[in-house]
Image (cartoon, rainbow, N blue to C red; front, side, top):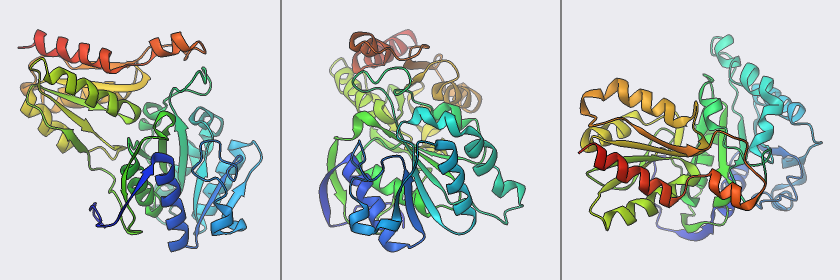
Length: 334
């Protein structure tokens, strides 16, 4: 079902929207089940006590062995189930890189399409309240490098619900990154169980004429705030939320850049080798003649995330640093 705004809506937080998507898909398809560490307790809330509503056998608590239960999920997926695995912190996806990169991403290709891997890995990531270096990373760019994986980065409750349902119904492995700082963001969410958001369709959250701002996940709301403040200074910024990095909506991005002539990318991952680097290369290759100046990248500093609240705040982009980068991009390239 293409993205549509259903008549019936409910005011939900981001984590409640994730929970609703999981519950609805388990009710619609008996092959969908959940696995993860303390998933019935659920420290961030999306799966708390969900086993009481959908059945004990559908929500499985696992030992602290990411490599084992992700491997088990890959096996379940190739035998016809649709597992949804939760990695409690996205940082610990590095523990099961072989299962994700060498197995899940490759099996369909290596079998000539005879074997599918309909697996979703949910992974809360990003900086939040001094979680420190091993619990704060945004690793989307790391996995963009791996063919065979799809990557969702929902920035609000509607997309969290709609994209997660699309991911569960997809026959390829999908990494579903939920930014922890978004869990209590709220908005009206369609209650239609068939509502989905297709992967590969970006959203233009704010139209503008002077510069395109391509913002990812937890940085989207900061980019919109920056655009609103810049408007008071006469700078018209267009904000694009890709919603999925793989597949990427190249057409929406290029159309916006061809209109504005300027591009600023914003992410919470590290600068070097980040999402912005790939987007910059893409736009430079395919819309060079439309650019009025170099692409500007805004990202977290190239360092482990500090524990100190002050230093953590200094590590991540803010609406103010985004606005400053956009203003410099426009003024230098008039």
